Length: 57
Image 1 (tube, rainbow, N blue to C red):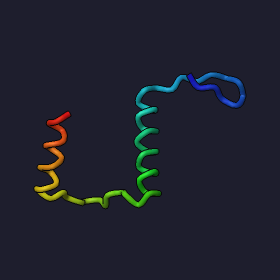
Image 2 (image 1 turned 120 degrees about the horizontal axis):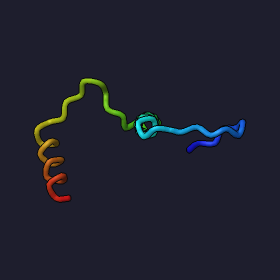
Image 3 (image 1 turned 90 degrees about the vertical axis):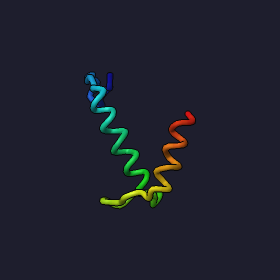
């Protein structure tokens, strides 16, 4: 439940929260200059490292 400035309440859906979180994370990455260009493809070595990390935990 969100409270607006006019005192009324508004229900916020889970999907809206997920969209907001994704938008916020993207903006944060851009500010920190760690965003990934469109069309970027990871190397096979990087994919192997990430797969190993996912398998560990």
